Image (cartoon, rainbow, N blue to C red):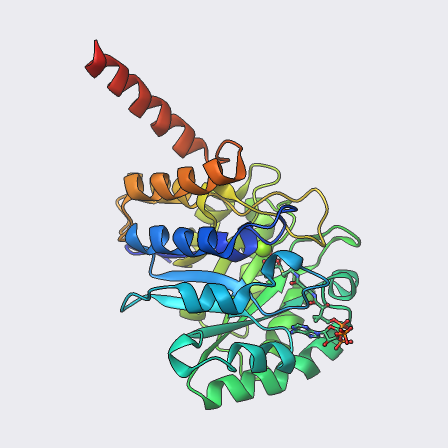
Length: 313
Ligand code: HMG
Ligand code: MG
């Protein structure tokens, strides 16, 4: 399989990135972040989640955020819905505020499934089935996130057979696309490749994406490993924001800036303006009061600062 010539990045920063923040981030800031990401050329943005506000308080303003976004034609807005209650909440808004895509999220690890969504893998599939069916009946695309496909904070290493099992269950309930997630960022290229190959037993390459957290600094390498299998869709997070509330110590997704830089260097088309993306990352990092986690953004911001210092003299 040759390396794809075009890649679609889904910025999951507003959801995966911000869900773990202890201090409430105002809805207006989340909305501005989405606007800046679409201005930078992102064609898919994971905006929020319709989960229990007791479990993830940061996402309690889901409806306000969805209502506040000025949508751009050609951009897909997705939200997480773990059950019918979540889907019904997302669809209780006027139709123009509905998400274009919903995400059901399961795990290849039993223990993580219990910690994250309070049920077994089998029970989660029973809950997702009517969600997928109802969403598709309304013309809403259904994505499945598969957590802990290489390692789990509670069970350790995860065998590819368990990924294949979950992918088969997702396919069986009408999920149209799956994300192979390294939730805690422990994966290395060969392990990630095996998890993707296991997924490909049930889904076509065009219906599979990579979702790599960068805890151990492996996410760019893992992205390259997935690219070499022909995967051309990846979840990334502006400024490397994030972490999962149920995966202690795990850091954010690979920074969108870092992946864009790598892809540009390889001559792969993303449609993303790296300068505008860095500005979006700076906007949210300033709000959170800490530096960006993106190595590329740090390097290019330093370059910008020294260029403007030279101009000033
Ligand atoms: P539960 O307690 O088993 O559900 O939670 P329940 O049906 O027994 O309901 C308990 C309470 O939650 C009730 O409220 C329900 O109304 C309410 P109460 O009567 O106590 O006031 N409830 C809801 N409220 C709002 N929206 C809903 C909803 N459902 C029930 N949809 C549940 C089950 C899944 C809801 C819960 O475990 C939950 O919200 N978990 C949060 C999971 C989460 O958001 N995790 C982070 C996202 S996953 C992730 O980051 C990984 C990913 O990025 C990929 C990767 O990296 O691996 C996707
Ligand atoms: Mg994640």
